[in-house]
Length: 181
Image 1: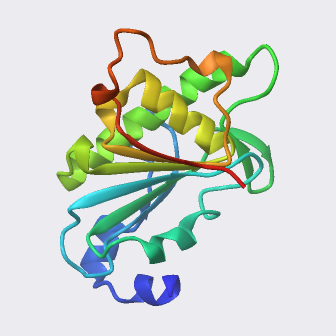
Image 2 (image 1 turned 90 degrees about the vertical axis):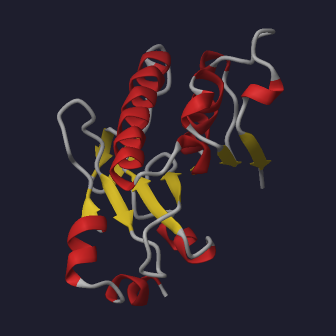
C-alpha cells in the first residue's frame, strides 16, 4: 500500500512533498515526508519518532492508517549506533543533554515543515515508540504549544524529561494517547 501511495503522485508532488528532509544545519535531522494519498494539499501533519536502534523507515507503515488529508513526516534520530541504526539519546549521564538537544532538533524540523505545508501546530499529531515515546513526552511537557496531540507507544516518562508543574493546566497540554504492550 505504501509503495502504491508513493507511485500515485505526480513528479511535481514528489519533488515538493516526498523528500529527504535536510533543509538547514540548524536542524540536521533527516527524515521522510509523504504527501497525503488523496493528492490534495495536506490539512494535518503526523510526525513519527522511531525507537532505539531503528530508523525513519520503521514506523512508515502507520501512514496507511491515517486519514487521507495527513502529510506524514518520519524523522531519523541524531545519534548513529551503526548501519541504519539510530537513537534519540544515550543512557547514562548524557541522557538529559541528549534529550534536550534532540527535542530542539525535532521542534525546529517540525516547525519548518508546518510552515512549509501551512499546517498549524494544533493540527499536528506526534507519535513516538520507545525512545521516540520518551521524546514525545518531552515535547508534550516542555513545548505543548508545538503540537495538537501526541500518541505515546511503549515509552516511559523518565524523571529527566520533566513532569507537569502546577502552572501547567491540563487544558494547556495536547490531547494524549498512551499505550503500552
